[in-house]
Length: 251
Image (cartoon, rainbow, N blue to C red; front, side, top):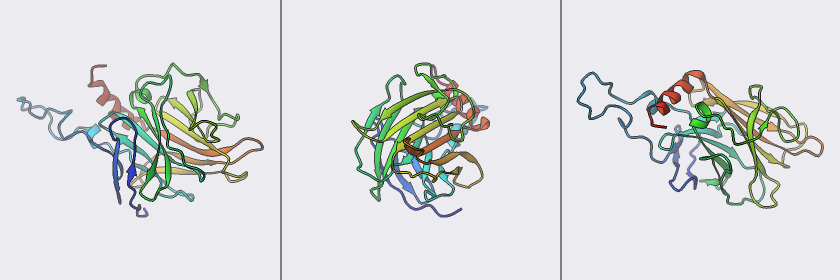
Protein backbone atom coordinates (compact mmCIF):
# COMPACT_ATOMS: atom_id res chain seq x y z
CA UNK A 1 0.00 0.00 0.00
CA UNK A 2 1.27 3.47 -0.72
CA UNK A 3 2.67 5.54 2.11
CA UNK A 4 0.17 7.93 3.61
CA UNK A 5 1.33 11.53 3.97
CA UNK A 6 1.26 13.32 7.30
CA UNK A 7 -2.06 14.85 8.12
CA UNK A 8 -2.68 16.96 11.22
CA UNK A 9 -6.25 17.83 11.87
CA UNK A 10 -7.48 20.67 13.99
CA UNK A 11 -11.03 19.76 14.88
CA UNK A 12 -13.72 21.37 16.93
CA UNK A 13 -16.12 18.44 17.10
CA UNK A 14 -17.74 18.43 20.55
CA UNK A 15 -16.50 20.47 23.49
CA UNK A 16 -13.70 17.94 23.90
CA UNK A 17 -11.21 17.58 21.06
CA UNK A 18 -11.97 14.35 19.21
CA UNK A 19 -8.78 14.12 17.21
CA UNK A 20 -5.08 14.72 17.51
CA UNK A 21 -2.36 14.81 14.87
CA UNK A 22 -2.20 12.14 12.22
CA UNK A 23 0.94 10.04 11.96
CA UNK A 24 2.39 8.84 8.70
CA UNK A 25 0.74 5.48 8.98
CA UNK A 26 -1.74 5.80 11.83
CA UNK A 27 -4.32 8.20 10.47
CA UNK A 28 -6.65 10.31 12.62
CA UNK A 29 -6.98 9.22 16.22
CA UNK A 30 -9.28 10.12 19.09
CA UNK A 31 -7.64 12.75 21.28
CA UNK A 32 -7.95 10.66 24.42
CA UNK A 33 -8.25 6.97 23.69
CA UNK A 34 -9.39 4.58 26.41
CA UNK A 35 -6.56 3.83 28.77
CA UNK A 36 -5.33 0.27 29.02
CA UNK A 37 -7.56 -1.79 31.25
CA UNK A 38 -10.27 0.83 31.61
CA UNK A 39 -12.91 -1.60 30.45
CA UNK A 40 -11.15 -4.69 31.64
CA UNK A 41 -10.44 -6.09 35.08
CA UNK A 42 -7.32 -4.09 35.83
CA UNK A 43 -6.99 -3.89 39.60
CA UNK A 44 -9.31 -6.84 40.14
CA UNK A 45 -8.48 -9.41 42.81
CA UNK A 46 -9.93 -12.19 40.68
CA UNK A 47 -6.93 -14.15 39.32
CA UNK A 48 -9.07 -15.72 36.61
CA UNK A 49 -10.28 -12.37 35.25
CA UNK A 50 -9.03 -11.50 31.74
CA UNK A 51 -6.12 -9.08 31.47
CA UNK A 52 -4.79 -6.89 28.69
CA UNK A 53 -6.69 -4.73 26.21
CA UNK A 54 -10.22 -5.75 25.27
CA UNK A 55 -11.19 -6.50 21.64
CA UNK A 56 -12.78 -3.02 21.46
CA UNK A 57 -9.60 -1.35 22.70
CA UNK A 58 -7.68 -3.14 19.94
CA UNK A 59 -10.27 -2.29 17.28
CA UNK A 60 -8.97 -0.08 14.45
CA UNK A 61 -11.40 1.51 12.00
CA UNK A 62 -8.94 3.90 10.35
CA UNK A 63 -9.62 3.58 6.63
CA UNK A 64 -8.53 5.30 3.43
CA UNK A 65 -9.72 5.80 -0.15
CA UNK A 66 -8.09 3.25 -2.43
CA UNK A 67 -8.07 4.98 -5.81
CA UNK A 68 -9.29 8.10 -7.68
CA UNK A 69 -7.73 11.53 -7.28
CA UNK A 70 -8.59 11.21 -3.57
CA UNK A 71 -6.17 8.30 -3.11
CA UNK A 72 -5.16 7.80 0.56
CA UNK A 73 -7.70 10.31 1.91
CA UNK A 74 -8.75 9.12 5.37
CA UNK A 75 -12.51 8.73 5.65
CA UNK A 76 -13.14 6.68 8.83
CA UNK A 77 -11.84 6.58 12.39
CA UNK A 78 -13.05 5.35 15.77
CA UNK A 79 -13.45 7.74 18.71
CA UNK A 80 -13.15 5.23 21.55
CA UNK A 81 -13.42 7.78 24.33
CA UNK A 82 -16.82 8.98 23.13
CA UNK A 83 -18.00 5.68 21.58
CA UNK A 84 -18.51 7.32 18.21
CA UNK A 85 -17.73 6.68 14.56
CA UNK A 86 -15.90 9.53 12.84
CA UNK A 87 -16.36 10.09 9.12
CA UNK A 88 -14.56 12.57 6.89
CA UNK A 89 -15.11 13.95 3.41
CA UNK A 90 -12.90 16.44 1.58
CA UNK A 91 -14.78 19.66 0.85
CA UNK A 92 -14.84 20.54 -2.86
CA UNK A 93 -13.06 23.74 -3.97
CA UNK A 94 -14.81 26.97 -3.13
CA UNK A 95 -15.22 29.37 -0.22
CA UNK A 96 -14.62 27.64 3.10
CA UNK A 97 -16.97 28.41 5.98
CA UNK A 98 -16.41 27.27 9.53
CA UNK A 99 -19.38 25.12 10.54
CA UNK A 100 -20.36 23.39 13.76
CA UNK A 101 -23.77 21.70 13.93
CA UNK A 102 -25.57 19.60 16.51
CA UNK A 103 -27.79 17.63 14.14
CA UNK A 104 -31.45 18.20 15.05
CA UNK A 105 -33.57 15.19 15.99
CA UNK A 106 -30.56 12.85 16.19
CA UNK A 107 -29.02 13.02 19.65
CA UNK A 108 -25.24 12.88 19.64
CA UNK A 109 -24.62 13.48 15.92
CA UNK A 110 -22.15 16.33 15.34
CA UNK A 111 -21.12 17.91 12.04
CA UNK A 112 -18.12 20.19 11.70
CA UNK A 113 -15.81 21.63 9.06
CA UNK A 114 -12.10 21.46 9.77
CA UNK A 115 -8.76 22.36 8.19
CA UNK A 116 -5.84 19.97 7.99
CA UNK A 117 -2.17 20.97 8.24
CA UNK A 118 -2.16 21.84 4.53
CA UNK A 119 -5.20 24.09 5.00
CA UNK A 120 -7.44 21.73 3.06
CA UNK A 121 -11.07 21.90 4.14
CA UNK A 122 -12.83 18.74 5.31
CA UNK A 123 -16.25 17.79 6.55
CA UNK A 124 -16.18 15.80 9.80
CA UNK A 125 -19.17 13.89 11.17
CA UNK A 126 -19.40 12.13 14.53
CA UNK A 127 -22.12 9.48 14.97
CA UNK A 128 -22.69 7.57 18.24
CA UNK A 129 -21.91 3.88 17.72
CA UNK A 130 -25.15 2.87 19.42
CA UNK A 131 -27.12 4.47 16.57
CA UNK A 132 -25.39 2.10 14.15
CA UNK A 133 -25.31 -1.21 16.01
CA UNK A 134 -27.97 -0.99 18.74
CA UNK A 135 -30.61 1.76 18.61
CA UNK A 136 -32.52 2.24 15.38
CA UNK A 137 -33.07 5.92 14.58
CA UNK A 138 -36.82 6.62 14.70
CA UNK A 139 -36.81 10.41 14.78
CA UNK A 140 -36.09 10.95 11.08
CA UNK A 141 -38.04 10.36 7.87
CA UNK A 142 -36.87 7.45 5.75
CA UNK A 143 -35.29 7.69 2.31
CA UNK A 144 -34.14 5.19 -0.28
CA UNK A 145 -32.41 7.55 -2.73
CA UNK A 146 -30.31 10.67 -3.07
CA UNK A 147 -32.26 13.96 -2.98
CA UNK A 148 -32.64 13.90 -6.78
CA UNK A 149 -33.96 10.33 -6.88
CA UNK A 150 -30.79 8.53 -7.89
CA UNK A 151 -29.93 5.34 -6.01
CA UNK A 152 -27.74 5.57 -2.93
CA UNK A 153 -24.26 4.57 -4.13
CA UNK A 154 -22.88 1.34 -2.69
CA UNK A 155 -25.45 1.03 0.10
CA UNK A 156 -27.53 -2.06 0.95
CA UNK A 157 -31.06 -1.81 -0.38
CA UNK A 158 -33.65 -0.57 2.05
CA UNK A 159 -34.99 2.54 3.73
CA UNK A 160 -32.67 4.74 5.77
CA UNK A 161 -33.57 7.37 8.35
CA UNK A 162 -32.18 10.49 6.68
CA UNK A 163 -31.37 14.09 7.45
CA UNK A 164 -30.44 16.95 5.12
CA UNK A 165 -28.65 20.09 6.32
CA UNK A 166 -27.17 23.18 4.72
CA UNK A 167 -23.58 23.73 5.77
CA UNK A 168 -24.34 27.42 6.14
CA UNK A 169 -27.03 29.91 5.26
CA UNK A 170 -27.67 30.20 1.51
CA UNK A 171 -24.93 27.65 0.83
CA UNK A 172 -24.94 25.49 -2.28
CA UNK A 173 -23.17 22.82 -0.22
CA UNK A 174 -25.56 20.53 1.65
CA UNK A 175 -24.92 17.34 3.56
CA UNK A 176 -27.31 14.41 3.82
CA UNK A 177 -26.97 11.62 6.38
CA UNK A 178 -28.38 8.11 6.01
CA UNK A 179 -28.17 6.02 9.20
CA UNK A 180 -29.02 2.33 9.09
CA UNK A 181 -28.12 -0.87 10.90
CA UNK A 182 -24.38 -1.44 10.37
CA UNK A 183 -24.44 0.99 7.45
CA UNK A 184 -24.06 4.76 7.21
CA UNK A 185 -24.10 7.01 4.16
CA UNK A 186 -23.06 10.65 3.79
CA UNK A 187 -23.74 12.72 0.68
CA UNK A 188 -22.00 16.09 0.34
CA UNK A 189 -23.83 17.90 -2.43
CA UNK A 190 -21.90 20.37 -4.56
CA UNK A 191 -22.13 21.93 -8.05
CA UNK A 192 -18.37 21.40 -8.49
CA UNK A 193 -18.57 17.93 -10.08
CA UNK A 194 -19.39 17.91 -13.82
CA UNK A 195 -21.56 15.46 -15.71
CA UNK A 196 -20.12 12.08 -16.74
CA UNK A 197 -17.51 12.20 -13.99
CA UNK A 198 -18.83 9.46 -11.71
CA UNK A 199 -16.45 6.95 -10.18
CA UNK A 200 -16.39 4.66 -7.12
CA UNK A 201 -13.39 3.45 -5.12
CA UNK A 202 -13.21 1.11 -2.12
CA UNK A 203 -12.28 2.43 1.31
CA UNK A 204 -9.85 0.03 2.98
CA UNK A 205 -8.07 -0.38 6.27
CA UNK A 206 -4.44 0.66 6.53
CA UNK A 207 -3.18 -2.81 5.64
CA UNK A 208 -5.44 -2.91 2.59
CA UNK A 209 -6.90 -6.24 3.69
CA UNK A 210 -10.50 -5.21 4.46
CA UNK A 211 -13.01 -3.02 2.68
CA UNK A 212 -15.00 -0.91 5.16
CA UNK A 213 -16.95 1.15 2.67
CA UNK A 214 -16.90 3.03 -0.62
CA UNK A 215 -16.11 6.54 -1.81
CA UNK A 216 -18.14 7.72 -4.80
CA UNK A 217 -17.87 10.84 -6.94
CA UNK A 218 -21.47 11.51 -7.99
CA UNK A 219 -21.63 13.48 -11.26
CA UNK A 220 -23.96 16.37 -11.96
CA UNK A 221 -27.09 15.21 -13.81
CA UNK A 222 -29.07 17.85 -15.65
CA UNK A 223 -30.13 20.48 -13.13
CA UNK A 224 -29.18 18.20 -10.22
CA UNK A 225 -25.92 18.76 -8.43
CA UNK A 226 -23.38 16.02 -8.02
CA UNK A 227 -21.19 15.58 -4.98
CA UNK A 228 -19.29 13.10 -2.88
CA UNK A 229 -20.93 10.06 -1.30
CA UNK A 230 -19.31 7.99 1.43
CA UNK A 231 -20.74 4.66 2.53
CA UNK A 232 -19.60 2.92 5.71
CA UNK A 233 -20.40 -0.80 5.83
CA UNK A 234 -19.64 -2.38 9.20
CA UNK A 235 -18.61 -6.06 8.95
CA UNK A 236 -20.54 -8.42 11.24
CA UNK A 237 -17.50 -9.47 13.27
CA UNK A 238 -16.58 -5.85 14.02
CA UNK A 239 -20.21 -5.01 14.76
CA UNK A 240 -20.24 -7.76 17.39
CA UNK A 241 -17.13 -6.35 19.07
CA UNK A 242 -18.77 -2.93 19.26
CA UNK A 243 -22.10 -4.36 20.42
CA UNK A 244 -20.41 -6.37 23.19
CA UNK A 245 -18.53 -3.26 24.28
CA UNK A 246 -21.65 -1.08 24.39
CA UNK A 247 -23.57 -3.79 26.24
CA UNK A 248 -21.08 -3.51 29.09
CA UNK A 249 -22.43 -0.05 29.89
CA UNK A 250 -25.65 0.68 31.75
CA UNK A 251 -27.95 2.02 29.09
